[in-house]
Amino acid sequence: MDDELEELVQYLEVNGVRRDWMEYVMCRAPSLLCCSMEELKSRVGFYLVMGMNVKDFGTMVYDYPWALGGFTIEEMNQQVNYLKEFGLSNEELGRLLAFKPHLMGSSIENRLKPLVKFLYYLDQPESNFIKVRFFRDIGIQDNAIGDMLVKFPPLLTYDLKRKIQRVVIFLITRAGINEKDVAKVDVIEFPRFFSYSLEGRIMPRHKVLVENRLNMKLRNMLACTDGEFEQNVRDAVERRWQFESRVSNETALNLDADAWSDAPESPDLSSG
Image (tube, rainbow, N blue to C red; front, side, top):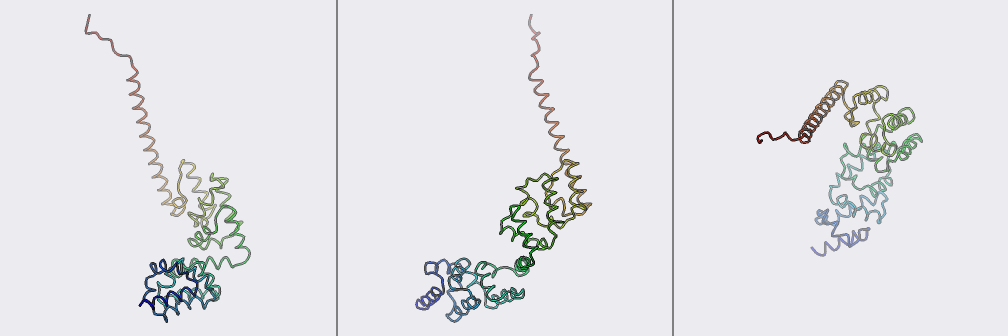
């Protein structure tokens, strides 16, 4: 058994997995300890055949040991075949998985499809690169852009000048959002914000909030029907009225108490 384990370790070491990483890798992917050499070679070859060099392979295994020992060969092929459907070559897949090995453990429906759409959009004509550059210019980091487009891939299909820029300008000039905060307030936390009409929904509802002296999260302001929005406004106004009434009553009581405490004492008429 020891000889078999040493053979396994040596094989991984030759293919870029440093010996001082082995304990870490085996602890996080213990199924590797049960692999035959034939199966291990199949698993390693699965990645190397995509053009991944041994240095990148070793780093990938260290970053995400589960990519090598956590799935069946069938499951591994399923993930890769899905990515190939979008025209990625073996070499492109190798580079992608070396950089993002967690994709091997990602749900195809919930994670891979949105992510591949993002990568696809980035490969589109210059207009989409300009949009990504615009997001960077308003302070969004590249990893946040990726997360944002995974949440809402259609964002890159919107016209930059007529849709995206106009909404951002409205937030800064009319909604009172500080320019340095605009990235976090509409884009990162709620990218679907851009799917709503500026004139048809965003501006009218913002006007109602201003008239009623209300603050409301963008999601609560926009992601509801007109009837639901009107009810939300009524509820918020009622809560504020109750709060202000309570504060007013407490202030009045405190003033009365202060008045009594400051009044001169009554003369003592019991003597004389």
